[in-house]
Amino acid sequence: MLGPPGAGKGTQASRLARERGIPKISTGDIFRQAIADGTPLGLKAKVTMARGQLVADDIVIGIVRERLAQPDAAPGFVLDGFPRTLVQAWALDEVVVERGSTPLIVVDVVVPEHELVRRLAGRRICASCGANADAFSGNGAPPAHCDACGGVLVQRPDDEEQVVRERLKVYHRDTRPLVEYYRQRPTFRFVNGFQSPDRVHQEIVAMTDSAAALAARPAAPTKHVERPL
Image (tube, rainbow, N blue to C red):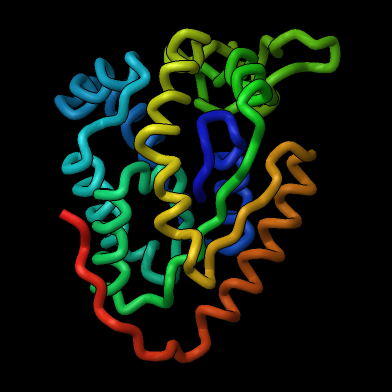
């Protein structure tokens, strides 16, 4: 699941994973848990994420490789927040080949930048259970309490406006090229994320089903293409 910060890909990835009975693997969640636990990885990631920057490729790739090797990911998985760079995309292709899996289905969630800033400025997470809250309540203000557990909702440090704008700059520089990398694949799709979450979900389900059917067909032989250095 590709898309800029605030596109809603995490929410959509969770919903799709639940319906398909496969794990949603979010590198952001993994790092935030490591930060909360005070692990060495968490301490290193905390400084990087607070600046709106990306964690080093080798660290992220190692974490994802370990997670995809776990038994629950054998039937399939939904990736949220990975890959974010071309180096990570190359590594993911290698993992897919090693697993003998069908081709990746890639969905790019597209949302205008002004809407991304608005969403992220109002996004809150539960300090108790970590659940995401809707960006704004009915009166136009950020909600105060978690619908799931009643805990206090707080803003993530990386959702402050200055950091958000830096995150979007990093996205356009490092992550947007992934769209060009995947665009020519028959299993690439894009969805308009500037719609209701239910409508976005319906379109993603239809897209993934059609792409999965296409991926299941025998592939024609292709020439080997060397990976750029």
